[in-house]
Image (cartoon, rainbow, N blue to C red; front, side, top):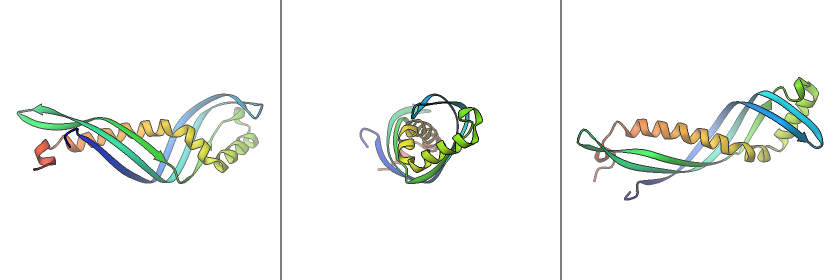
Length: 142
C-alpha cells in the first residue's frame, strides 16, 4: 500500500475482438494482400495485471487515481475470421483462416500486445471511475 501498487489476476471467460487490418507481404512464398475486418472470439483468457496509483488532493481530501496498468493475457481457445484477404478470393481466404485457427497460439502471440494495450486502457478508465468517487480513507480505512 505504501507504493500504491496492486497486482491483480483477471479472468475473461470470453473476449470478442472486432478490428480492422491491413496486410501486404508473403505467406509461404505467396503474395498476400488485403485490408478489412477481422473478428475473433477467444475464451478462457487469464491475465496478470499490475496497477500503479498515486494520491492527489481535491477539496481538502486525499484521493487516489491509477496512472499506469500493464496487462498480460493468456488465451485458452478461440476462433478468428479475417475477411478480404487475397483481394476477396474466398478459397484462399478460407485456407488462411483455417490455418490461423489451427495455429491459434501463434496468431494470438502476435495479436495480444494490441489487445492487451486496448484492455489496459479500458480497465484503467473503469478503475479510475470507481476510485474517483471515494476518498482514499473511504477506499482503505485504517
